[in-house]
Image (cartoon, rainbow, N blue to C red; front, side, top):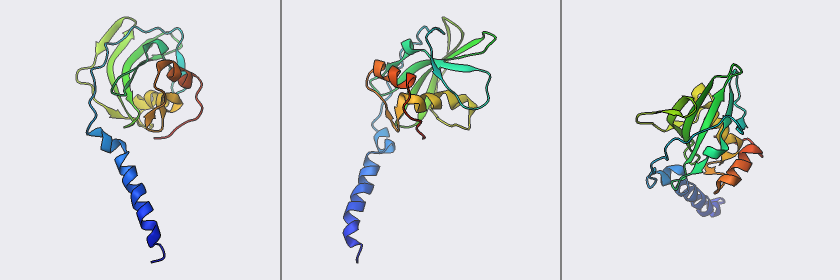
Length: 168
């Protein structure tokens, strides 16, 4: 009986956590059609420091960043090697669910290969194919499970000058 006075506040906090969780909001969410893949440039990339052993360097093209009305961050991630080979991925990032989607891939500037039926995939540090997207989220695109900024210029600043590393 001594702890009975804690029941209502605890129940209220538990209910608030459930109602504000991404899972509760998921049923109302509708993805809008992604814009077509934009042109990209290796010049002016914002470095994305992908952890783990890789000979590739990664960068996001700041000119490609856009925020959809559905809350999806669209971007072009460029992977390049010291030998000069370039690969790019046109992707979407959902901070609320910690997922990303690849819409198109390119191995030469100006030519995109659109992915048929792209699927949302979980950000997973153990999977090499998702590390660049996870690093972008942690480097400043996401603040926990929300998009870190409402405008592209603010998002660029946060990604360029990350303040902390966030975990999912």
